Length: 395
Image (cartoon, rainbow, N blue to C red):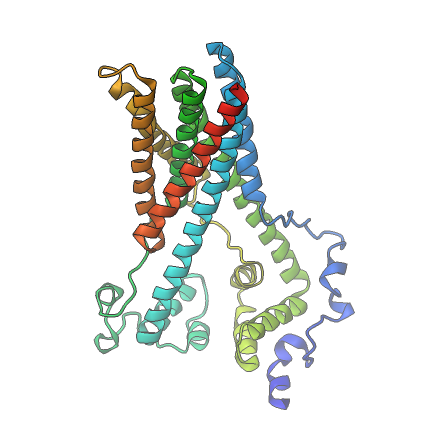
């Protein structure tokens, strides 16, 4: 234990206590009220979902009311669509968030396999990354236990490209940058339009509302994605400003917190101290590491543009949402029966949801049959709710 205390001297001043001393700023609670310290952003865990769902609900329902007013149709559709779209938004958030989580889990499985089977090349990649961020090559090598050579030797597995086809290596998930936006917009579009068609069928009203709602809800989804993504990005930026202030003004306590966190994650105390000592030499890297390890946040890439997410959401919404509605146009020359058109729309909607379920399975690296079944089931539940509510209110 004495050896540990000696090794911790550069950071803790010879102390091993996890709590910072009063002269170093006290606890985080006392730091919060210090003059000059930036105000922390709201820690609401579901802020993005609330922002996304709230904005989409307001714009969608307001647009539908406008459509109803223009077409002289009953406002019964408004209530039915509100419930159906709420279910759609909730399911869309769940599925897209779950897809993102599953994709991250799958990616971690692949990375674990690479580290286990090709430790040298993986360490070299990490050394190179730290060096690109401005870290001294010796410090980067100390942290990773790697070597100086940038290219892995052939006997260690060669490049990542050759590793990708090795027997036993897990298949990597799809690296689509806008996968979540496409999944969210596509699923919400299918369920929303399918539900609206069900409402129209139950109330005997024209399908014109379906096309009007498709465009309005697509704009709503795009704006919702933009605002929520921008909010998430701004919150991360604000959190980094706070962390930077803490690291600058209370370096000892901040380093102690990171040592403790590494120790809680299972790292040996000597190794944790050594790693933090090295990170402490590079303030920006230390700040980013604290953001990731302690708060689970990372500053978005400077090239990341919220408007691109919004554009992909809007495009996915229009593309997938138009599929159920197209059945009405296709069947017009062949039949005047609303029931036949409704059945056609149901079939098209199920096919579209199945396609989206396959896309979800590919993104997350999950079972195709299960993913399709879950996606289709979600849509059927929302559509049934819309149909039932409209039928009850009309009667």
